[in-house]
Length: 326
Image 1 (cartoon, one colour):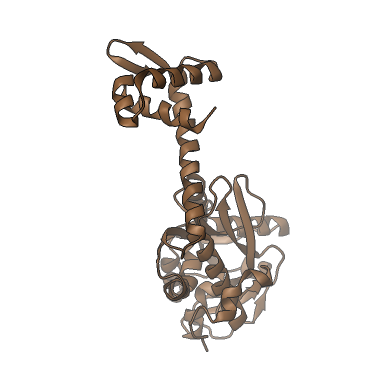
Image 2 (cartoon, one colour):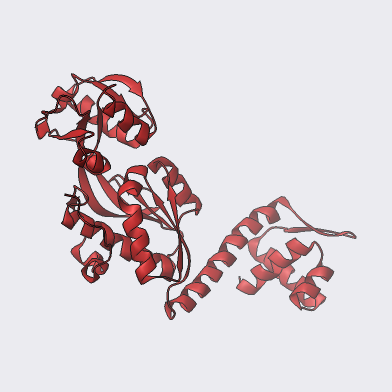
């Protein structure tokens, strides 16, 4: 089977007849017909119904067309990737960021891309990790930062950092220990996201392992709303330290690390195994990795770096100009 046959097949399917397809493809009608007949013989199925009105796809032809489109699209991507490999990275790159990651890292990432890959059009999509996974599988994203450490079918993941979860309370009373146990947290009324949320699953699994039941008084999906409710004294919550660092520094919230097994989460960089990276996507991934590593090293992101030290050459060039918070 040759690529030429697939292009001819797709052209005939689109045109609806050999005559129209031969004109569009600049191929003699008898030669085009012979190529289609040879393809049908090779796949062992009739791909078209011939009639005086033209050629219509059979059910087998419709199935084969979907696969042919994927093959032809991958060939085009490969051609573009080779062309891009010898040029300055350019084009659109779509990255998915969970809300808590986006709060801390969007601006430094945009600054790094603007400085080092100005010809790349970066599109940042902010959503829950579950949605980002679906969009990564469907090809809507070039890569995404996700929470999780377990292998995922169809995705390649590179661990970047690990952050502890914290008990977060309002500004009163002012005294709060630096570390608390999960058992102590369970005694407080909590405002948490719903059970389908990734953070909630981590919390519930840790509680189950310790035989604890939390006092969840309200479920709220919006991170901003959760923090406002806690600030108003309507309950406490569990979040990463990085997601509340500005509010803690301003005295609006207080936080204490939860010193219990299972109360941490990993941030990984994920790509779709079936979609090879473009030169632009690979360049942005290198930049993002460098930005996050530098944020962890400066203390802008309270976390432990677990990625490869060599994976972030961008950091050594000063990428990410955000100032460390006091």
